[in-house]
Structures are given as structure tokens and as C-alpha cells.
Amino acid sequence: MSALRAEATGYNHQETLMRLTTHRKEILDYLTHSREALSASALHSALPHINLVTIYRALDYLVAESAVKKVHLAGDEAFFEVQHEPHHHAVCTECGKVIHFTTNDAELAKEFSLPGFIISDLEVSISGRCRSHAKK
Image (cartoon, rainbow, N blue to C red):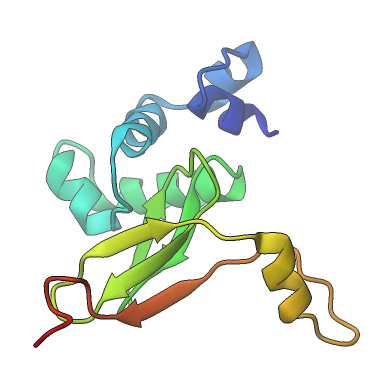
């Protein structure tokens, strides 16, 4: 576990405190308490006192330190979240609603096994229509 990941989960580590700037900590705290993955622009709307470029740089750092996960859900914009538990995403193509779900990743990795390729991370994103839009 990286020092920043430990910080995100509540473990206090002196080295981590030195590497987390005020803005990085604020962004990490906001993502930790969010119920959904957020884009950099959504974070900027929620934390307007932090410059958008600073938000992008902080997110790059937090992703590199494995404190935050970068996910691609729909469109070109990346989303960021602290995954308290590993999970995947289903995205409604009508309203953009994101549903988190879990599955047996070991079984999926076996299903997707490729000769000469070792899977190091598994991220599933499914597109379709949520219950509210399924009948339309």
C-alpha cells in the first residue's frame, strides 16, 4: 500500500503528510467522501478556489501514487475516484447514471487471458440503459 493510499484510508504516516500539499489533501479528501467518480471540471466546480491546472496536476500525482483511480466511463473526459472496494462501472447511455458493481475479477482475468500477456489491472465499463430508461 502506498503512503498516500494509506492516508486516503485513514492511516496517518509522517512521510505522507510531507508529500501531500494542502490542495492535494483537499482534493483527496473530497474524492474520498464522494459517492461517485468525478471529472476534473466537476472537482473544480466543487472546489473553485483551486485552479483547474492545479487540480489536473494533483490528480496526476494522486493517480501515480495509487491513492486515486482514473477511470474512463463515457466520452473523452476521465473520471477520478477513491475506490474503497474494487469495483466496475455500468453507464447509462441515456442519462449518464453510473452504477457500481463487483464481480469475481479472478474469473474475469481467466476469461480474458491472452497468450504472452499478463493482466495487471482489470477495469470493466459497461454501457447500456438504466432501469429508468430500459423501457424506452
